[in-house]
Structure formats: C-alpha cells, structure tokens
Length: 336
Image 1 (cartoon, one colour):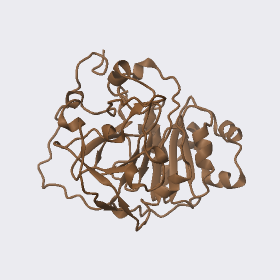
Image 2 (cartoon, helix red, strand yellow; image 1 turned 135 degrees about the horizontal axis):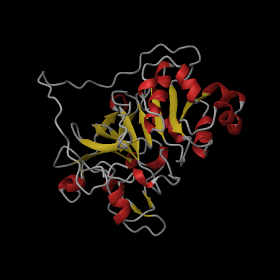
Image 3 (cartoon, rainbow, N blue to C red; image 1 turned 135 degrees about the vertical axis):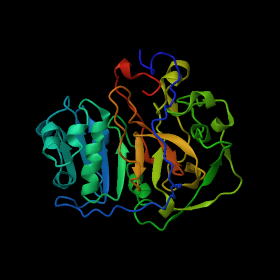
C-alpha cells in the first residue's frame, strides 16, 4: 500500500535547496486587489462541497456582513438545485455564489484545469474568486461543521481587518520549533469531562511524549496587536481534526471547555515567534494570505493540514461543532 497505510512513518525527501539569503518575514499585508463587478464584501466564507445545503451554509448566509462562495465538485448539485434548496432571501442572493462545474470552467483562472476533480483542492477556486472580489479576510471551513456562536465570527474577523484592538493572551512556550497546542485547551471527554490527551493531525508521532507536546504557559500575559495576527485557527468540538492513529487508539467525541465570549483573553493562545503547529481547513480565519492555497496531490489528502508559523490559536467560539458525515475508509491514513 501507500506510505499512509503501510505502517511506515512518512519521511520528507530533499528535492532542491535554496542557497540565497535568509527570508525576512514582514507584518501581514492586506489584500490590495481591486474588487471586480459583483463584489461588495470584505469578508468571505469559502466552502467546497458534494452535499446539499447544510446548517453551516445557512448560518453563514444569514450573516449580513459576509459573502459566501460554495465550490461544488462533480458529484454536487447543480447551481439551480443548490440555490433552490437554500431558499435565499433577497439579501442572501446578493451575497451568495455557488460555483458548479460549468460555472468553474467559465472562470478565467489558469488554475481551473490544473486542479483535479473529486478533490478537496477545488476549494482553491473559491479562494481566488473571493480574493478577486476584494476579500480582506477569508473564513475557510467545512460544510459538515456548525458554528457555536455565529455572531462572534464577525468579532474575530474584525481582528484581521484594520482593527486597532489589543488582544491580551498568554503565549505558549516550548523547547522546540514545533508545538502541539491541543493540551493547552484542556480537551476532555464529551459528556463526563474526563481529561484526554490528544494532538492535531499532522503533528509528528515521534514527538508525542516529548517537550514539544507539553506546552507551558508563561506567567506573564503579553499584549498582541491585532494588526500582527495573520491567521486565527479555532479548535472544533465533538470530532476535532486528529489523525487515524488517535482515532484507532483514543476517545471521541471530545470537547474543549473554553469561554465563548469574543476576544476573551482566556480563550486564546499565541504561538512563540518562529514556532510551528499544524492547522487545518476546518475553521480558519485568514487575514494574511501568504499560505491560503491548498497543496494538491492526487494520492494523499494533504490539503487539510498546514503548518502555522507565529499565528494565533483561538477556542471554539467562532469555530465549529463538527457533525461529520461518513467518509471513505481510503482516506483514513496518517494524513486523513
């Protein structure tokens, strides 16, 4: 079988080396694209689907200050079927776009024919569609989730769009350049509150019991300016983004006992500078688009896992209670 199902640990392979000067990271730059006709929103939610409209899509469309684009795959409904099932209001019709196969092929993006069909990577079309129409913040999510507090999504998005808010949070400390953030959120069994150790999908298994998996909270509470926040990743209750090893060996469902008030200091943790942690496409707010596009590979389901560098982790208040539908067992690998 593949490396994802053979029981062998995946190992990176050096393809080429960069011998130039070290890259200098700059503060996030806001989108500067001129909105095309049909724009009008600076906040966009992007989803890809093969399903009929779900509760999450209805929640997002109900937010008057958000636009929503849903990218359908070949198995999905046609535009006419999807929009009819959604039963949009007049305001919703102005802020909602559904891109079925025909609509995607009519777009002028060069990437359209390079992306495989029947693949999560079709979401890249939605990112390009939103950015071309002037998006300054993008909410990247799955349509099998539900928002715990839809009203707070705009409050979190405000951090990414020209806000002067100072958000106080504790910074996680680690002995290494990668970190498992889940223990800091106090994961527990849903229902009885029993503590549960867990890790995000993409975290190296050989580091599970090292200091990288045991972040410590510093005594001081640093102030982080909203203008420095490029990515807001929320954890998800019930069925969070974990790998197949966790699913086979540990407990689900899980919840995270955190406050749900927008911009609550106790609900957020900052990653130290030059520290990485896995993050995903389940509930992510993008205010800086340096890494928004998904890597596309035909064999592995890599698009859902990325590495977050000096970004911000938040709790489920703007995130999701996952209500996942059954998925093919072929995706149940170390990556899936």
